[in-house]
Length: 381
Image (cartoon, rainbow, N blue to C red; front, side, top):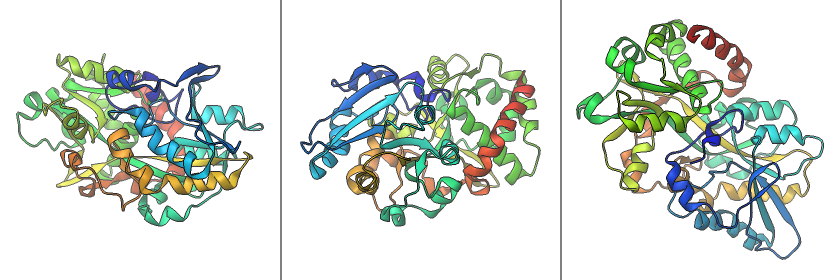
């Protein structure tokens, strides 16, 4: 896993688990070019037509064979339409690279803008309006949560944040169904929780939004009170990236909880890492409340060959692509007709989780997130 994946200043997409697997499966065709983490091209087409795609460096990197996954997703389209696809991962980050080249776009498509950065991209005129026919297979709530970006960005995957925990220490083998107030008031839980900074980490930002929505819409209380209560226990427990927080979690020295993703138990089972770590969301009155992160694909405004780009967006919702996501991204496919691999039964069933995003969409968040983070910084200083 590459630490840059969770740095909001660098990308709009969060990290996924275990750097060691990413290092083992990096595609051999990757070479470093100026301004990009890597450049990749299958070169299957012979028509002279080329699509340039921006994405994050760990796209499809968390399975057993990234090269095979890339070939299945990009190579299939190349062969079907006799085109070349060039994949680039901007070092600046997806949104930042689009902003930099707004007047002279260097890409046709962008894969991996989250719902919040998607709103910013639309506001700045970086994306072309397009709604694919396959949207009818996407859960309508995913589209609603995209806010004003829904007509420009097509969701292709989603997942819930989770609080990973050491089963033997935190729950002693029992079900662990914490509330946010319990985490802050129980000293053992408060002292063990590892988090990420919301101003640097996309995971940290999402966790802050989760907590704000829970306090505001479930408890109807001031969200800042939770942070004031837990602040004395956070010294050395808040990190700039998911990877730093998870590395500390792995040491097990009084750090037995970490803000991560609810599909982690499925990942651990699939790769044989055991069941010593589980994941949970937060509860209130026997209802599970979670925060859903959504990632989408969009067509770059003023780019060339938009008809081919539209075909690629349509294709991205097809079973060919969507079936590759669970075991390579460890997220849920946006296309609700695509079945999940059996190993996902080890993750929390998302149908039992109430998404707090329902109360506040990406457009509203985009307008408030700066103020919320500023307020958080004042509390935690």
